[in-house]
Length: 404
Ligand code: T4K
Image 1 (cartoon, rainbow, N blue to C red):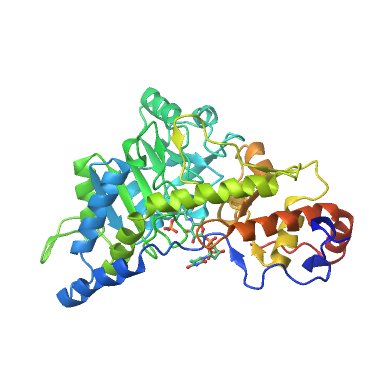
Image 2 (image 1 turned 180 degrees about the vertical axis):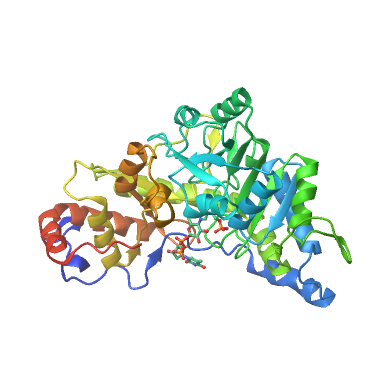
């Protein structure tokens, strides 16, 4: 009898479950017609970049969505962070979690700051404010929380810490469009928050980013800095750079922002299906729901592989990759163990971060993933656990080849 458990797996010589690979981070397309229509005007006007009408409309719409007074669009989220720390005049060290995308740290280093890596809560995967407090010293100039997976980090604890220590709190909110904490958007916390509109984000502008803040002077500095420091023709008043968002990106941003509610509903629907599909698997746990009061956008489908189970995370990634399911292990190995920082001495180990890096797995979700796809992923995983001995032997012989 054949059933999910004895299905022939591609890693063991069977036919892959998916002819066309399934990706984590497939872009949302939004309303194609609206996108192309809005560009007709751009072509008619021949105004392609430099604070164009679509950029202004996108800035207003983002500011409203996240509840901030000001939004300054830029070319990507990494540049947003670089400009922000420069505009704030930060010096010395900035404390942030190691468990984040590498550019949260490298953007700081690029601006001459030293990232000091702190621990996370194993429950939320986000910054541990108590550990952050132990790392504050004379050179510390700011604390940066990172809102991961479409949830919120413990902003209240961080801001309490910032107040007590007289330090600004900033946020990397690259994942946080559409997320709410007690009805408040990401723009209602800290000195400022950076956003990303990379293709893989819930609201995408192909590439893009923004800084949101309530501080008018900071907003003014940032908008000068992103446009070479010009206040008018021939008048450069500050050191600037070209960090502008173009009109095509702003059109895509407006288009996908208009569909953010639908995108969240689709993500919720896929999560419900994954709950059923993964339910028979005792060693694979979907991430717990966020604390009460948080409305997540569910843009990442995050699970943890139980270390006491018969297969480890890398073996599961190898099984899935062979089947055409390109699951990921964000943010392995953790910034502190990535090449730019791995050789630094004298830093405390980060055991919670390192343990999570070995367990974490993200599955494909969103509008390009169907219920049938999710059911099939569940069956493939059941088959993998049922055939764990053959898989372990295969991997021991030829190596697990997890995606980067
Ligand atoms: N802070 C945090 C917490 C972040 O997560 C990020 C970015 C940033 C800051 C910086 O923001 P940006 O400067 O990027 O605006 C991807 C994204 O490139 C990156 O934006 C994102 N975080 C990170 C979590 O994921 P990679 O290196 O994994 O990208 P890549 O090329 O492997 O693509 C990811 C998956 O998406 C693949 O399975 C393929 C799929 N994909 C990708 C693109 C670009 C598509 O299906 N279509 C596409 O067009 O970093």
